[in-house]
Image (cartoon, rainbow over the protein chains, first blue to last red):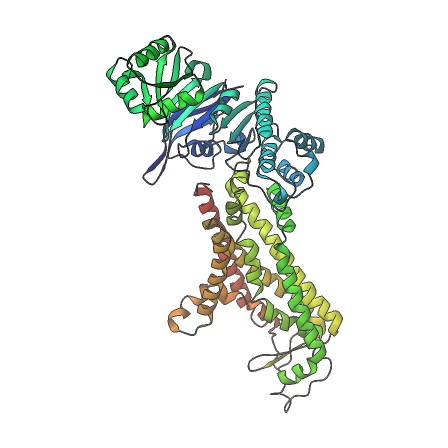
Length: 302
Length: 291
């Protein structure tokens, strides 16, 4: 079942096309990773999903209802944090949850509020004012507010911002728990690609407002194709050798070493080719990660 | 809607800034009451120096009713500035804090949010006015006692019997609530335009000062627009203390000299409130929440 259906949406701020003809679909139960560099249009898209920004064109359907015409009904089933965990500094964590509980049509009991505080690890600081909280604690409280009313769809924009390694791990586990154990649909954006790789089942890569790729992460990361990072004693010489031979088509980029996208069975041939050409090799490292895939796509696009 | 109102009221009354206005009003009133209690006779003599030769006034002239009238004359000009502190921060303060996107992604329309916030700001304004009324009227009555209200107007005096005074103050405070709600709605409109707190607060105060100057200037060009300016009508609570007289020039108990003027002022102020709030709603509904 499709939870989010985005059809050809665009958002223009004057001459700037922040989002340009974007379409995608998120199915129920997916952890959908939203990737893109700063300014790629991730937050603008998320704000359009939450009806904070009006699209210039296109339409968005969530749970089969248009967000433009059924806003309140749709938002009742969404929990979200957007960019920073901005909260009221003069209120405590518990007061925040109590206040936001009143804004939901579902009855949220005191024990549900206590459970949420435990879930985000703030039960010991529930009566402290938010102005005494670290960024990570505010982030956790923001997630608590998003989860408080037990929504079917959770939208998290950079949820691990400001968290320490343990906090990042906790949030990752929480997101996976929400999807696998509770059947929630999670749309999560992050600039930490390894995080998305560990928690998302599907990804969408956005670049300069346009979609570069989307689909199941396992399909996108072709196991037969590797990213090879070559470090040499003389990069310029190595580059000339590569460009003059049959490996030139695999060249990705040439900053901080040389990167090639190459079928895994050709890696030994490349190695041999460079050695025979007298290139002083320091290392030939092959990887197949989301980060490499992301860099490959965005550098090609640039 | 009631969820939004209670949400907003809770926040207003948990903020330290809210109590600045209550403290400022209390401090001003207590200082003035103290001064009049200590040296009130000199003040009363000074007020009545022009009529002492032609009129003999007995009794407690400097009573609680007169003190309240003096206090209202002084304070109702400045209280709008205190109201602006809260009202002009209602939307822009949230935008500045970043919480506006949290609110606007809840299952309520922006129109509901703006209306709920305005009602909450109005409740704050009314509570502030009740606080002012309690200190200025009831504390003054307790400290200075009661008697007939003797008022010196520009070219005549008004004497209102003490049993005819209290309802006039009720009317004056209801009128004052309209004046202050106009300021609240103006602050609200300013708040919907900006994304920071200071701009709308200063903007509201500047607008009040600007239009007050236009309202008081006796230049024919401005006389055309004067009747339509809210600042022209804000101080017409005083009309409740102008009384009709019979053929023998005796005051008619329970009468008001110019009821039509009060009605006109209430209509002008009410129209401003509706226009300001409707415009704030339109602006908020149309804008993208980027901050």
